[in-house]
Length: 411
Image (tube, rainbow, N blue to C red; front, side, top):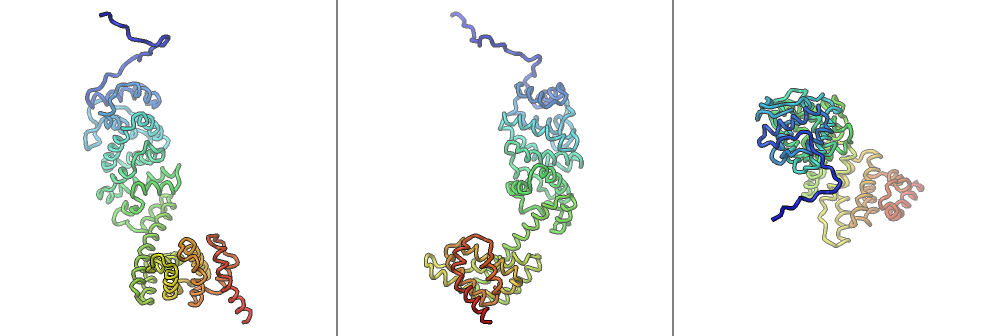
């Protein structure tokens, strides 16, 4: 049988490398091969990326070793920061300056490597988790470098690294009690906010399921709203303080709404409900405008709606307003709060078809109970700025407004 020559592309020159990395057969030789590439190019990440791509390194088997070399310059003894035997290079994350400018190129380098090998994102996740769980083993400067790297992985959207896994690695009682976690996340937030907005950070925290747990990052003795504000204001992260304050208010208001809804549904004496709300407002220093809005929501929540019977629903809602108007009146104590209540009712009636035609009667009922003053109603009627259903509601309120104006003229 005659042998056939292998086909070749005419005119194509096949380039050969001047040297070849021997295919590693264990973690030690794999690490040495990667270190060799780093050292040969003196840390030039562009050239290192090209050589890594051209090599026959088995990243599916030795991916974790690769990331150890990226972070520390070589292999570490398991559970320590002590170097394992073998070559090392001086261009790792932990050998950089603790600045964003020094670490960003490494993140971008890894982005290139992982884009060509998407399976490695899980490996990076595992290595980062292990590093963060071992933060106690590193000094303050190295912890800052790891925080910067963590922030940049999310800022640069490093191939979908899951924030929940990374942040969950920090939830160690030991690390939290020593203040290590608090300082780590503070550095992380600072770097992340260089290129991203507070909304971006909030979105990241929600994906990490940490938006409701920020206080849990504080040592127990500092775990308070005041301690939170003092720490992050001092670190120049006042926007985070504002967000957390609002978040705490939302939780307190939700609790207040639930308690009020239950008491109203159980027909508890209105004076008892008023005292309960006053106590909750004082305890959590809740803004008056939010308290008034929450009272309205609770009154409506407690209505036992009757299926599709529109007239019956209207009667039930109106009866509820008349019965609990005193509760609104106890906290709606200024013209500004009265106007805000009118806007709240306007939006609610606009968004709930059951109440669309009931707006004028609700306003009349609250006027009769001295919750809404004549001046407030006339001001809303003439100068109200919220457009939701306004034309319909103004038309419906015309007879009552006309009556108010005629009564005023007679006086």
